[in-house]
Image: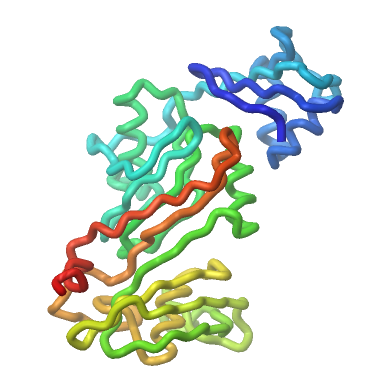
Length: 290
């Protein structure tokens, strides 16, 4: 990949070979719509504005892309809880009961990120790369630049962005890998079930700690189906505590016991892997008592 750096609201890409502008942009998984939008006074090569995607970019040429946009979500007035930030990526912590995208109440995680962007003077669209269930707590990955949104989406689809979870269940759990298809439950809205006609789903579960009748489990996803961890655990008799859809209320814990606790991804500016973790949740203190 070409050399990349960001300065103010300009993205600098230094080409490493002779190629067309279109070929260079495609190498970042840029789609047709974004390419069309960019080639509209937003791209220059060696200081000269370019509007032809077939324009030749030579080895060593500097491509500038204007990445400034107005924040496109209404601010909630509340700052998001930042766990990690660099020039391209923002990883924030979602609370239980909050959705990621805008629900018109301006109380979604995206609205909190908009508040943060405005407070910092960032000229950026709010672009989340994945979502979490409403009651799931934990880390959510945002791309700070529209330009890299498609790239990170593709990284997620190709399992290059790795997501790991923790779950609390009642009982003494044993390590296992579940490889069962998941489909919609036709009888209950927003509920899923094990189904031979569903989509392939695979999850690896590892017991991390057992204490006083409850197990803390590490969950590794090989696929990304809706409610995958919740459905797989319920299917073997270990529903997550306080899961209103697949389990039942447990007075020993405040919230649903599912946490997106770790994200791993490639820092494309430094070409190094980054691991971001966060296990600071009130209910997890149960397993830290001894």
